[in-house]
Length: 147
Picture: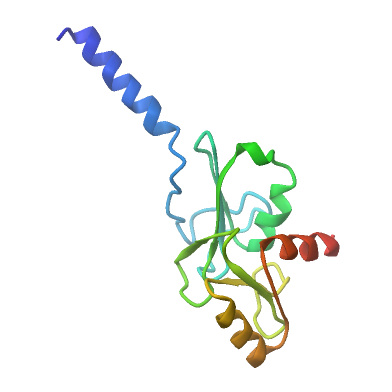
């Protein structure tokens, strides 16, 4: 195999890996929210979006993700993730998570918005802290109504 062939194989591999839609871990305390420019520090309320071209966007709060997706084409979004309030640092697929807005649970941007992996968990948290439970589409509507 020639040096030129090896070069093209390596270049092709680098190009393919550069467009990966796999999310990169959030570096808490270092990464900055693309929407509000605050540092991402809260592992229980962060969020992330990866485009179909592999571009990574990280958010300090779920409401920042919701406000930012209005600027993006749906076809360009590969994956959206939100932090699991009950297991900080674990990320959930945004469309499958259950959301609660509870005045008893503060979030970084003040919308009192959190996400969990199970509807029963959300209802339990609402029983203890007050608030309401939502799915992805309904929480988008509620957050956009505050604007």
